[in-house]
Length: 481
Image 1 (spheres, helix red, strand yellow):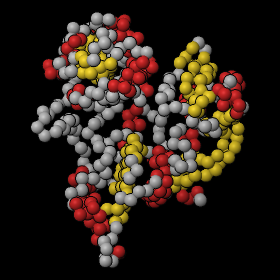
Image 2: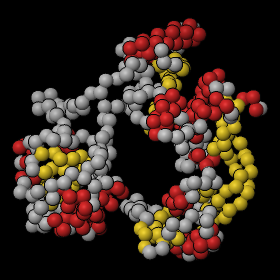
Image 3: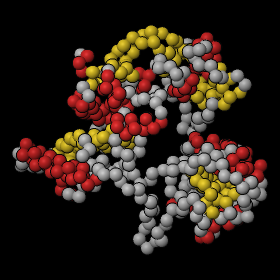
Image 4: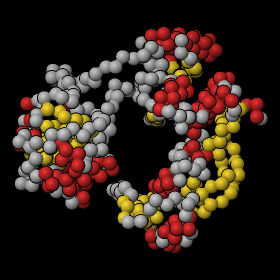
């Protein structure tokens, strides 16, 4: 049987001995959890995704690669903006003579979608008569029109589309469906929105080495102990928390928080502690604020073998990742959940491995991103607006240009360039202000700090390398106390 660590707390009924009520309710909860372990822990069989429809409506079965594009979808009216002939509606049948049609499901708030459609706007004219890009969005006309005008795109876009996405269900965007010769040729993200790949498809080739796949059957709103059929017991649960071993049918390294429930699936021990102490150290790049002081066999269960072979890493993850779910019927802020998680992690891993996680101040070698000249920084930056788009880094000769960059996005670039280092990079600059900056291309701050500071000085910033006290996440053996 799988190891299963759970706690359940219940509210007593009125005029009832609180202790007796808790005992009876907890007994019922643990019986339910035990039944769940017996019947729900075996491997789940994969199931095809079916879209539910209202009573009396036709069931819609999602289309797969290789399927013939249905006749009714060819003639489905679609509302559009920015049509070259000023039309307000189209059907895909209008482009049936094209060799290739790409349906691009997108949204105006999706930065990767914007970048992809920027490229497709330039690519479309190169294959005039052979290619048709049809962006698909559920958003309303005014929002879509505003973005198309701002981006100065020449291609059209649909808006207010509700039926078509049901045939191509997806959880992330951009989501692109390639239609050739009346069949679904491929389903991808934005990886293949390049001139060379589109040209290869038009010439009869197949450049797709991988397709976009998503598990849409998993509902993070259903608790891990889940599917309780005893309504009375379910109604009495005031708060719960469950920690399980690795669950292969659940997503890897994912987290959901909705204010009343917190779920994390298939995380390592350090990743769990990083979330438990996210109020003390930044979750982003937490591995640079991590110190592991355990030895021997225990260290093999805690430290991810990043340099091992792929198959060895997969085996390690299956043996050393965990899932957690906690919730409450009364509002709790995330700090309360973090305290609870810290206590449960230290309780469980203290018994299992004889370790604990805690925050300690240590003297460490670090890089600090700071304001060097406040007047220059304020004149070179501005407050972030809701409509601001974060542009990807653009290489120009021996420089890399960042537009609408924040201190945090710049810090991420620094961490990436110094990815072979484990030195913490600390941000002391407000993340609410954005600026444009160019930095040395291919040079990490650790290899050429002076060159970086020349660039940073133009926006009133600087990088300082120093030894100083810093809060660190320490995972250590209990016998080290």
